[in-house]
Image: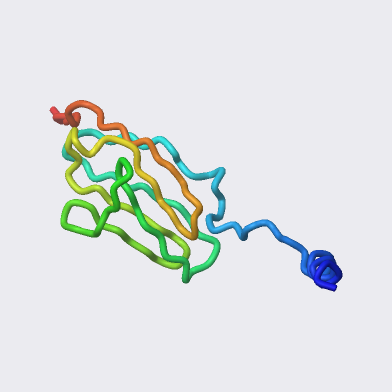
Amino acid sequence: MIDLVLLWFFFNFPISEPEEVFANKEKVQKEVKAALTENATLSCEVARTETEVKWYKDGKVITSSKKLKVESEGKSRRLVVEQVEKRDGGEYTCEAAGQKLTFKFIVTGEREYFLST
């Protein structure tokens, strides 16, 4: 009898793929470069406005601060790195509902200034 119940359950409740949490993944800029002292933004789009994300740097969770600002507006999720320093470079991850997007953040040399003559 249990076997019949299991068979009924298996055939009547299809197993579906997990819902996509991130939208437009193919359009995400996965390698971001910024010069020293500039601000840099890592961003992605979620499929639903209520989706909460967590940001990580090199595997450690990030909380919003003066230096690292976690922003959410509509379906857009952003991590803003203020006044970039060499130590800010590394691997950043945006995670939601067990799905992840990974970014490589590269800090380049000095900011270039142009003088007008």
